Length: 94
Image 1 (cartoon, rainbow, N blue to C red):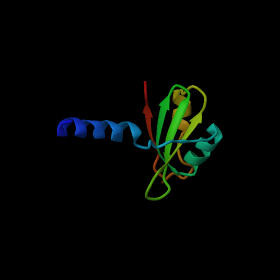
Image 2 (tube, helix red, strand yellow):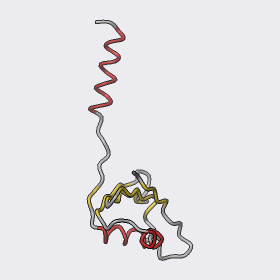
Image 3 (cartoon, helix red, strand yellow):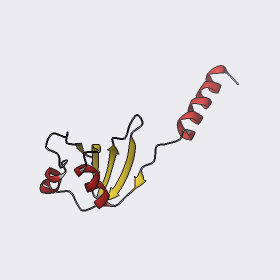
């Protein structure tokens, strides 16, 4: 067995066996509460699946909610209640 094949095997094991970051499943109402409280950095929307990142210190927490189909009015409403709090970055995934 050559050094190259050993290195490749180790790389494959590291890539496929590395732990993945999972998102905690919450209600859509919890997502809107987190946004209103200004705790959300980013929201990724794919159909009815909303995955978002919560500001909570050094390691950010990921959460996931299933909600209604996104529309322009709903997306514009996803803002913190405090006018000076930064709005979350919203990303649509196809």
